[in-house]
Length: 467
Image (cartoon, rainbow, N blue to C red):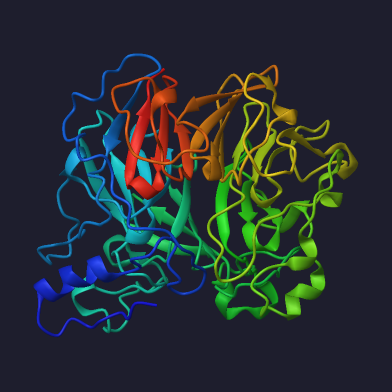
């Protein structure tokens, strides 16, 4: 692990530190980690001419292609710096993206940059949103990372001082607040834009399985960290989804389950997958091995999911809520895409649990590439990491191990929509998306026009396929 260095000499030293942090892909800063090269993007794509806007073509939405990150407060005035032109913004392996319906911006998880950034609605610039760039879970000024905490009296942190450790997803609630899967922090955090503060909402930062049947906060609203009887633990929460009733679903990756935080009562419960409750007293195995498996066509709590375990794992098991209230899951280590349907009450996690069924909509469980233009359930995927469901029910898949993006139609037919499956690289902007090369894409996201945005992770780019 790279050492975090204390700034003793001034701003220049601090800028250098930002480029030293977590240099390797999914670096083991604070737990987890993995390999990967220092891949750069296509240096020929240095303007807007590669973004034709022609349907079916791919272009560069943001990023230089260099594996780097930008300082959110370079002048040290405790105010987030101004925007950067989108083609000049540096990302250190962007992991995923989410559109904010309130402002039309694309919020980007700058993975090894430990910050969330936002591409403007017109696509011209990238703004800093939250995250100091230092891996952590504290509340400190960048220029003095050893300083005492700057927490507010209510326990929240001013937006500019909030540290994160490899966030993997964000979602927005109906009030416009941003909820964050703080993956290596083992927490769910919330950014209140109106107050400019970040709060730990759920999770005690202990990587284990604990707390089903309890709440994230005590009955008096006190932080759960001070109330052991109400502690909830996650192990690498990788993804979030809200349903129409405001219930928050969490992909608890290493615990091999999907959990729900109730909108009305705050109760945490497992709604898909399984983790042995005995794991609650352990917390040393870094993952729920007993929960791994594959059971299909059964009630969701009898089903099994499978994500890789151990220090070398990476973000997996992401999910999205479909327009019909079904939950779609990238069951990564099973090499399939799963669907959880609600019962007759149309609310996952309530009513008759036997009516809530988990089934496979794509993949055979065998890693590989096959099946385009045929039934998705007969096709092979290779460790898919993310799913995105369109308003008409079409499902887009980040087929990460195959270096491509695939689509499952509403009739169950699978096709490739971006990349040449099985081949990695960085080329093709301005050309048909199926002729382009991607490098380990981890995230997919649609805008309201149907344009498909791709986190081209090891190319350090955000790319877009035009509808």
